[in-house]
Image (tube, rainbow, N blue to C red; front, top):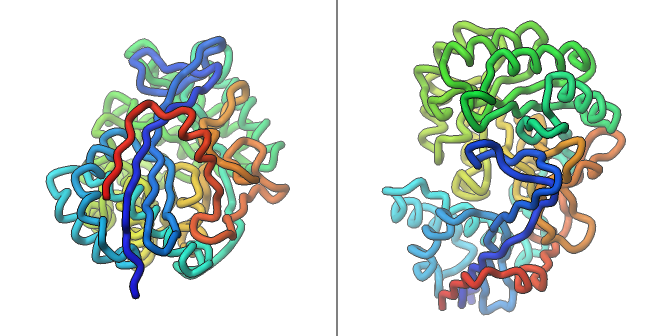
Length: 391
């Protein structure tokens, strides 16, 4: 008999980050000594009649709202029929960004790994089990942390000395006074001058730069120091194929785009139009592990590399099964604040600053499914009261 989904539970919970606040507009996390920021995530459990539960912790409120619209469809279905469910739910969410698919698909892969007693990367086809890792910074602050080009250069040296082979700058945001393109350019140059011969360097303005001209200025500064990529520079929101085609014509630094387009077809169109050099994918954003690996294969067919967005066990399994990927993103890191990892893991899984080994790599979990042990007592103790059960 095929296994059957009997119940799905989604629990919203909160956790806090010390010495972390937000910038002037409240959108970017920044170092803020003495402040505490509360963040919310969702813990998903897919129960089956096999006594095996598929699990995933992550997501956001818009994605969770979408899960509410299709969870009942899954109850009574075979959890191993991921491709069928992916196709049906993709169609059902056609009027939305489909971010609700990701957490559910990841939990279904977790079930499959536990069902077959294998880590997800083995089900996908393992290419490697250690992942080269780059340090991906918090946004710039005005509080004595990453508050100047020199501070970024100092921290880049610290990351180099810790063993990271790559370093990515997230610059400033939060208002017109903070968004000074000259400071962004000076930071690119300061970091390039300090460690450019020893590390792969990247910069991600996170669409904060006001104009195409600002993106061009930052891109030309990247050219001076052979940056590996420039990512989502300006206020198109990272989605203009025409704008990034033009930017590619005017700078030498490769572009990394598609973090902000959702799904397989928009990624494919972006690549086919010549609007990016590297391709972004995220199992949480792009339709789960199923969707992310489709993007990997499309990029491979075009001869391009995929760089996975953000840290997490699902990202590690995807990258482990992708030849055409270079770096695991350890984010967000800062000289005076902890990474933003939620305290939901028992055991030795970590996305904190000190998780890399002497070669600058992190391991891929080798237990069944995602290979992590979630702390469900912590989730229950910090639940916000938003619990949805489908059965």
